[in-house]
Length: 361
Image (cartoon, rainbow, N blue to C red):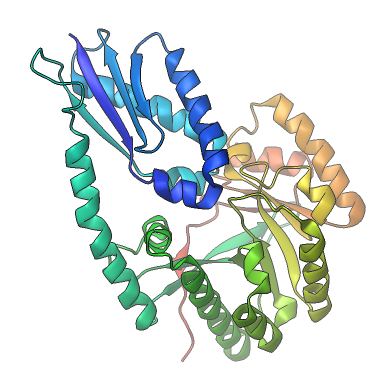
């Protein structure tokens, strides 16, 4: 059966907003090259600006089967080139149709997908504005465990929209912020939410270590600096630098990191080994903790090459006094492998899932 399948990466503009056109074009080119080499389908049209691929095939029993196959292939290739949060943000939407003599090259189902997006996006923008105006962000924590010994090191702070909102999911929440041009406002309000929550728990229960995600550029925000300078428990806060674009100049960032360390904060690097915080970044930044991304941990314990490379990284980090955290540990085999090669900390569904924080009254 001949099928014509249109694949739309609905969230592609959000990815380009983070990565920039040049990097986006490089990633697009590798996706095109990969799909052109696939013997199951024939790529006959693609558009970077519209984020579309169009395929023909005789290999599948139905257009739905073709769409599922192509969707899986593209997701796999995207996962190799982008960190996991951006792959989720890309929100791949699959549309398929059967080719007929009456079907024009330009008369595809793309209009349906585009119309659906235009209907959803304004609603998301309105919801996001309400959440920010009414300060309705909800803090969630996930535990960070010691690997070489037992016990909880601390927690990672995560943010969610209201439970009854379409923006409860962090992926939808931050995608809406990007689409609305309010990513900085969202990040600052998330930071305030985490710091207020942490202060209350430290004051009313007991001090605990908390890692808080923050983009490097936000360390130079006056609002962020006010929060950091006035938090009463800086020695219990780890600022986890997260980034989806490369850091062009580390010099001012390292100076800022030094100032924050003098105040008592730790500096962590998130998603090392994926995205733009490559392993070599460790040598430049020398974080207190380098957090290995879930894509790497997923390959334990089977991938011996990854294990060999990780041993060198762990040794280098330990030499200057830093630690390594394994993110996304989901089974005992991964945990055993992490322990065996000297990883210090871990988090993942093997231990617990993120849960809403009960803020003391």
